[in-house]
Amino acid sequence: MVRRVLGDAMRSLNVSEACIADMLLAVSEACSNAVRHGGPANRYEVTAAIGFGHCDVRVADNGDGPPSMPPCFPPPDTENGRGMLIMRSVVDEITFGITPGRGTTVHLRKLLAWDDEAEARPRQLAAV
Image (cartoon, rainbow, N blue to C red):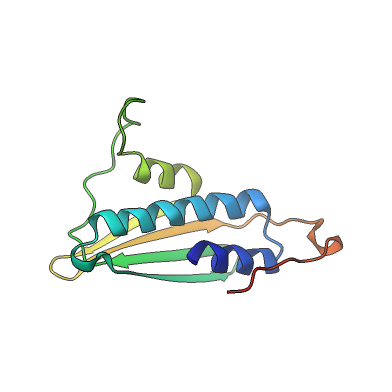
């Protein structure tokens, strides 16, 4: 649901598909981490804002926060451990807000790139 709503919002503003794909990948990773590490009930909240040439997304959960950022990708045979590095590689800024006992917020920011040819194509936005 988050991917559909955010992607359609960015498409409606003529953001480039490459930029949209990067942001949706980062948001997916942040949501996956919230489900996996976010504390009891695996509940999390996503908020997004698009304006002033960038997209900001915050994913908040009840977890204790991420471990430190890994210095490099794990070996290919390792099943987990790439999420934060993937997020860092596709957005312009990533920060973690950790409040002991209250949870963790991942803040992703991406500068927007525009699709100059989008005006000429018909829009096909998904219904939610």
